[in-house]
Length: 343
Ligand code: NDP
Image (tube, rainbow, N blue to C red):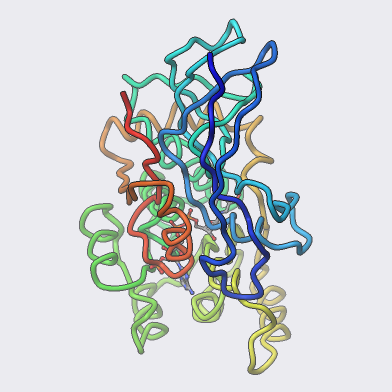
């Protein structure tokens, strides 16, 4: 095959606080010839996820940052254009980590072949992929919801939060969702079947939350941090569990917020309510739980017990703007970029 070029979006500079489109740059590069075992991929869907904000920063984290000048990382659904790996056929769709680019070269062992007849391909980046698994593992392993308990989750219309609430319901718990704005709240309650949905932008958010949990909170699945967490903590029950999954409200904060130091009061709660607070990165549970997740989640989706919503943006060139919006709740559902059409 003649040389293939890839249009890609690289990290042009590291943001200080709020990122802007200037932190990204588009360039076109020639891809290398394939070596034995490799595959040439064209990107069909690119996943945009909050963790990418962390990769733009040099601060210490659980994964290495993207270097300035390197292509932005990201999960993709890609199609195999050329294969020098006997296990990956040309034309197949695969789950890959192709990044923010139109084409990529990967080791055939690093991709997972997808069955387009099983579910829409884009779900491999959402409800049936990493975000869905994050909800499943974090809730069931750390949150351990029991029938009749109350589970609270924010970013409830997004891929992680929406699955958390619905899986909590499947396990007989009561699900309270927190989302930004009346449209998202209506979706969380009426389409996803949460018992209650509350707008964290409402002036009386803390009072609404208190009224929504008359028996207190047994599981708070932490997706956002900030003022939402401040309102939740006083409502946590004895032995409540808090899987700490993400803190999207503070990813752009360049320094600690102004105001009183809430840490002593928080630690007091941890002690007197015997709270279990456990951070996690989904990858730690893959070996133990991914097969169970695949079985359960596909069945729940087929049964209509696990619904999902996608927010599809067309064109790789729109990825930076869409990503910046994700950090402020402009997405409505799992955010994916359609980089090229499916066949
Ligand atoms: P979403 O698609 O739900 O997007 C993030 C959402 O966060 C926004 O849509 C917005 O929803 C909400 N949000 C943004 N800023 C604020 C704020 N200041 N206060 C309250 N809510 C805010 O994201 P995901 O479902 O992909 O991810 C949810 C969380 O899970 C993130 O924190 C992410 O980092 C984390 N995560 C962690 C993983 C792990 O392994 N630990 C793996 C995957 C995700 P709204 O408009 O409703 O406020």
